[in-house]
Every structure is written in C-alpha cells, then in structure tokens.
Image 1: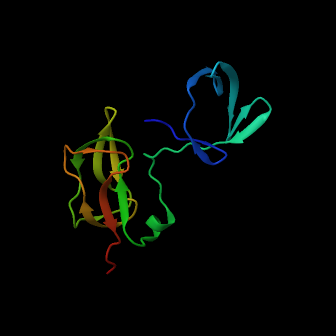
Image 2: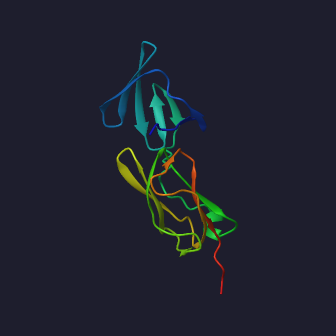
Image 3: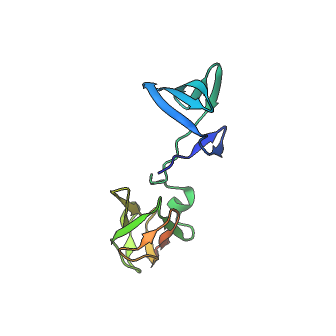
Length: 148
C-alpha cells in the first residue's frame, strides 16, 4: 500500500527519488540529483532549518467518528485497499456490536478484519466471498439498531 504523504495538511504524491533511513528517525532523500537530510520528530519533519508538521494516515486503522459513535444514520464499511474477500462474518439483518468483525479482506497476503464502527443492524452486505474489491469499495452497511 502506498502511503499518503501530507505537507502542511495537503496530500502530496511522493516525488521521483529514493529514500534511505540512515539512522533511526534520520533519512537521506535523493530527488532529481539533490540530496536532502530529513529528521523525523514527534509530529514534525525537519529539513535543514525548516520544520513541517506531518501525520500518518493508515486507512486500515479503526477510527470511531462522532457520527459512528452517536449512531446517526448509516455507516458504510469500506475496503482499505485492493484485495479479495475471504470471509463474511455476519448476514444482512444481524445485530452487531461496535468493533465486531464484519468482513475479512485479504490484501498483500495479510487478512484484515473490517469491523463495525458502532452497534447497530447490518443493513446490507455488498460483497460475496472470493470477490475482488478495490480500495474504497463498500463492503457492508450498518444502520442504527432499534432501541427497546
């Protein structure tokens, strides 16, 4: 999976060049024949005397948004990267808990369990086992559960 690099909050494609870690947190970057030393610090990257903020975005990481935690509206479970659906753990209509496994997607020889972002009812399963999926494909939809 290709990392998302943001410079000052804006997504950027990595330039043609090479990156080599020369020591922990220090990288030598060669771009268009010019060499740059980059030091990674907590939340910042230092290039010479200039400092830039950075963040690491991992689409596989389960994040609970305010909408998901509050149970307002439907929540789609998306494929974090291209892969193959190897297992479906629930059926449409099932009640699920927050963090419960819904679909397992194999990507880069690793199996990733996609989890429910909140408690609710499975409104739809959009894939079948052995389906190939692209990054961002909707795997399942969770809607708020009925409160007794």
